[in-house]
Length: 400
Image (cartoon, rainbow, N blue to C red; front, side):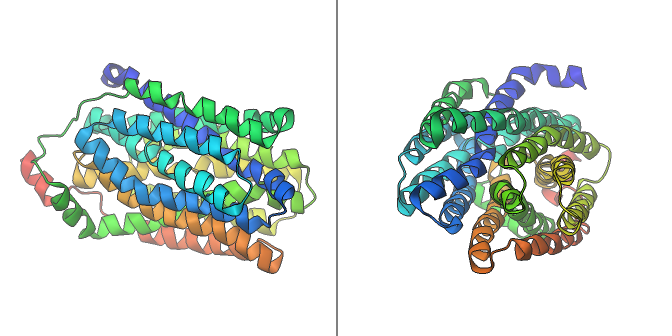
């Protein structure tokens, strides 16, 4: 494996570093909910809506960012995304109203993330890696990038304690600006398996008419709902349950740490077993983990156990989902097609982030959203099960 992936070392390293920064910074946004809301007298829906809008803007922009990367190269797309990400963080530090928060933390950062996250970066890795090692290569890049969710979360918490939320966001904006020069490392070649030429419109028609593609998209909706609800609202949920404020940061850090192992293992398993069946197993496991967390007596140790187990399942769906898309349709338009599936992920993210705040304000509890997360997990497991991991006729004919 090492010898076949070694020529792409610098590309994978660049992708991992960009994902480290992009996802690591984003993973800590939930820590800013309480201090910003307390300072400006906002209810939780204000911050939750801005984060939900961020995810929706990210999702809507993702197919366009993917199409730009497929047609004109990923480096320019990543650099533009990094610049918008840094600008959004800087303006977020000056936000004093719900509107300014939504425009900065929501719209700008959301569009910036579309150029600096999984759909573009993993597509570049998948396009460059040999077909037989594609799932593993994506898993390695995702795992290394996911380490940022563990490593940067304590740093974000320290910034909050040392310099306050506003200055902390400015510093994070400077860190995000490093993505712009790192984009120069992401340059690869397409291992297209002699794929026939295909226009963007032809690729869209082919994918959207494929039942497996639609099922993947609806299943990924559930992933987005769960991870954003938990990422934004878990720290406040634990404080509501009388656990110390540090508990939320620790649990999210554990999610980030064990996510590294989870994504790597998912990539490894994806080389050996059916990726759609693995996705079904992951979603089923999530339903069990969430149910145990909600219905068992809560303590620091059960919260930490939840962080560890959810971390193993957190973004393990990403290399498996993207790898399935590559198997079905090839890699020539992988960034765009992954971006379309990711749009559904982000619609789920919008609803998970916003409903968490809305229903809490209405009912004083997160219980309804927890129950909904369990039910959606079961639905996603059922949706992924019938997907057949088989290339479309266009690719089969090219290979014969």
